[in-house]
Length: 596
Image (cartoon, rainbow, N blue to C red; front, side, top):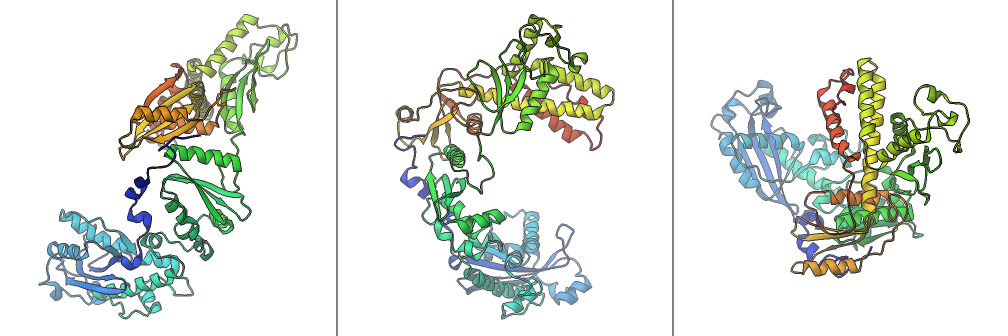
């Protein structure tokens, strides 16, 4: 894949101008936190419980900037056990402001800060509930839950549990929590600072790292976060390599540095990824002009290096095809590669089982022979059991004429290439018959076999249509207003670029095509790229907003091919899942009658 000026590398100011504080990482010492606690008449605002007290402390860089405290008149009787627990009685709140006055005052106090609470869903849930009831716009607060964070950091050896009282004792809080809002908020401030101090020793220094911290990420992993520092804030592919230079893992991201940093300090908890990071000594990157280019490069690099920690796409060469042979009495067979022998091929299929199901569907719908022996023009053998079951024309014993058998072969070839209607009709009729006979399990098997064929054949026919096209140029306008352009040759991505602002689009496309990779044609439905790459390109071409700039040759799909049945089949499946009660198996097969 090649690119021209402005195509392979984003304009210098593009990503810098779009970089957000989230991508850079905001140091904890520079942020303002508003630690809040509530006292209520019960545990559920939705269930009618009311707020009786709001307490909050605003802090930054370890210093207290201000405090907020107010009792709230709940306009209801405080339950006796709540009054005993909190010490807030009905006479105390009789002259207190209602929530309609207290909540706006608190929101003004907390404006521009990060909300912190111990068991934040409770406190923030109450506040949001009453804001909605008053039709107040809820500010776009970031929320930090010290209880959730403590569960990731504190062990049983540190404290018996993560209750506020236990954590306050662990971190030697200057204020003991006592079920009063301001006291509990002050205690939570000390807990927050204690957690930050402990995590600072583990390399957590930004709010992004704090919010996504996981105790499953080892200290050794965090110490390697410097490996991400040289990476750009741009889309592309990253490669983890070990001390010997062997590629361990390949991934892709819209922001390379931000994504790679998560392997060291954030939410990466997969065991095998932790093992990979421990072995990694270097992270390399390939900056790409577009997201599609990054996805394609990822596939190619995985296929090239076959990294041990990538689970998918490592062996694109391991595919299967359904082949209609060229011989006096043709048959269907499974093969692993396409030959220049004039035969018809359907595929490629990523798994042998899928290929087998497609082959079985064709053999079920058409009475083509299933034996593997080669036959002369005038065979003289005994008929098999399939002939007795009327599932084979039986050319082996001379029963079928060459013309009749050729007609069947022609219909099989048509189903593989451009006309799936006879096969779909066969299975639809078969399912109706089985349903009428209450043979629902068998009808379900027919349904699944048809579904596999429709999906697989549609994909194969779409791939064949794209890979037959010598060159296709398409563009789409992105959210930032720029146009991305891709040059596709024989189903392979040959070039990708982003038209710079103010540039002449025609000149840019002309230069991009001139510098694009030369792609030669070949054999089979996917001669120049892996089926997965061509499928990625197809999905992009079929997204909303894509415009064809130029097409060399033809890019067409058969009108009566399997693709036209795909949408109908998906709609039927969705209806079956939505409308048919679980266990009502009688209805399943008949829902496939309107497949066409």
